[in-house]
Length: 139
Image (tube, rainbow, N blue to C red):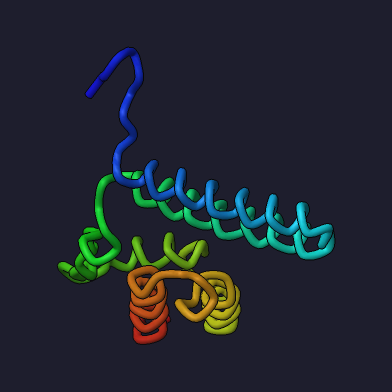
């Protein structure tokens, strides 16, 4: 809404405007009383409060969703059985690798993508499934 060439601020801008006015008036009061250290403290606190408030408003504008409304991805559904060729590919081994090579590849991959280390449950399940399938397979 425009009035006499001025744009009226929305609610969040009004809040920031009054925060600035409050801290500036407190700072001027401290300076007029020659309490410079208190004026500096009020200035720094004001910067922190206003900066934090601006940052929170900016972060909320991202996609228009509140934290509670963020879409959650459903857990992946493991469909179908893994083939032997897929198992070799998952572990990064050539067909016919020894049991020790399978265990070493399993440990190396799980060390990289374990869910406790930032990996996903889906990848960990696929690696477990590949190892189990290849361990059962007769040599």
